[in-house]
Length: 116
Image (cartoon, rainbow, N blue to C red; front, top):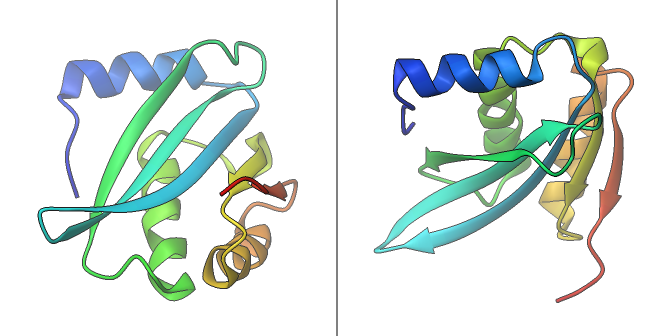
């Protein structure tokens, strides 16, 4: 996992603390390394969002996406009832990951991106 500097991580935690969280998840490969790109922010201030890149050896399976996304949300101090909105690809493993995430984040609503 790529680590944010402690000061930057604390600034982001302060910005989303106690607020309703959204996140957007996508994946890419750069120089042979797969990454999850997780953009998140608060619904109260959606114009201020933050990018968190999570290095993963296998992004193409729901069983690797769920723990990665959960790790990022927990590192931000996100409580389960504060995570409300998820925008993901329409790919099957991403949809499966969102369904699994609803067990951990009960108020989560997910939308799939329809553009290619």
